[in-house]
Picture 1: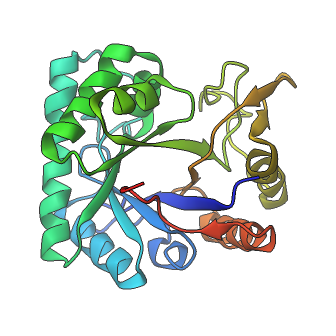
Picture 2 (picture 1 turned 180 degrees about the vertical axis):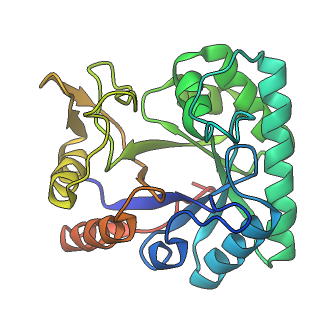
Picture 3 (picture 1 turned 135 degrees about the horizontal axis):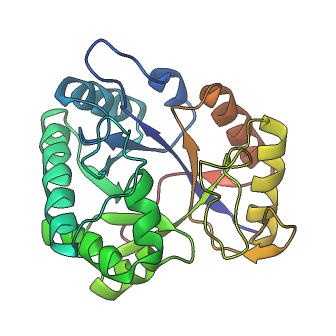
Amino acid sequence: MRTTLDLNCDMGESFGPWKMGDDEAILAYVTSANVACGFHAGDARTMHRTARLAHARGVAVGAHPSLPDLQGFGRREMKVTPDEAHDFVLYQVGALAGICRAAGTRLHHVKAHGALYNMAARDAGLAQAIAHAVHDFDAQLVLYGLAGSQLIQAARTVGLHAASEVFADRTYQPDGSLTPRSRPDAMIDDAQRAVAQVERMVRHGEVVATDGSVVCIEADTLCIHGDEPGAATFARVIRRALEDWGVEVKAVNRDS
């Protein structure tokens, strides 16, 4: 049974006059925010506003770098070299770190977005490139990655604090990977079903895959997607459940 857990959310994904998600409402329940850095969503003004709102709520701010795919929302795989990945992750992390400084806070972590996250979960070279980019910028940053994936191993190899991430609103495959969004069973849209999945993760360190098999996982941080309908309700219900189970909900301690 876990006694502490970070509750994170991908946010800051509005762009110009176009709004996505209810970030302000979600920030009342989460302990860390993964802020889009302009490559898949977000813009400078949205980044600044989100960082300020998170800081005001005492929520840890993280960079959410993506493949350069604004039209595809960063969810389409692209052929990129490790060197290319290193540099565009470094670019995005640096941009948000500067905005955090102006907003009176400090960047806490990095979590890759969408296709980049899933590609790096299975590709050791890509995972190492991301880990090196984060380490090159600031070795004190925490790198979030899919539990049991290449990202976690790469973070530990370069000496970063790695946070194993699990998901409340996504289903899993037997190998521990996330079900592709192209499949109709990829998302969990029922809050109580999500709570049941989280409870099994927290109490037993496991999740049931779509084929009924049981996958062992390590959970340091739990993700809720801010772009999904009802995300604020999910965040509220899951936080309340965690507290009812006696789990302390707080940001990952990067010094531990």
